[in-house]
Length: 282
Image 1 (spheres, rainbow, N blue to C red):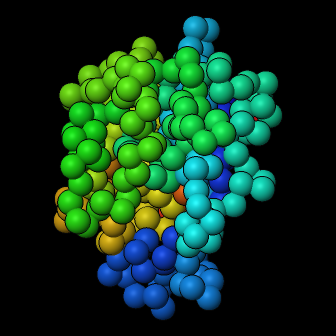
Image 2: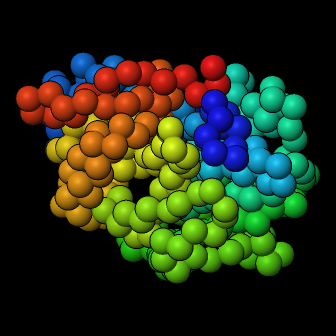
């Protein structure tokens, strides 16, 4: 797919699982298990999926997934599996390597979105993308470095500390565009300062759903994750966004859905649903 000045590729970086109750909040299991079948530990299977944007002078990665800096205990807890997908393998599929990436847009610093920012070189943690600038909203940066008890488990300092030490982190204070051809929309319900990149031209627009729309099931407005720090804010944000996305026929990109990369949406009697599933790499 090409939008504006960028060729766009969907990049899967890992398979993993999280607790179904946490992913769907107050929604009863009898309802959500129809959308995502849980395993014996009540976890639902998902992927981490990034967008690679290739322009004339830039190669931009939006989010980096779980990464590989995991102990055996946490690999088992989150069911993280890199046997099929990893950043390096998925980039190489399209002829690129980590050194080619010029910019990494971190929608937010939760471990399943920023874990691949860094990696091990022996026992040492180094930047995965040594030539990149890593863009993070200041609101989310401040929260990640001083989290509440509720969300402290979602942030892992090793995903960004070496980047800060090497002056690779670039903080964004608002919704100003910092890379040509990419607009930014901020939400604050899931976590403060979550950046949603929007890539558009006169014919097509993709809205990067991140964790306000992690899966297709979350198109339903009340289906809000228990991880969200301001769930009522999420509901308001989802309502406004879904109406805007449907009105303008934008595509939503899903970072965690196991089967659907992106889609357009339509309104049913009670909710928004898929209109047309989109395969980015066609």
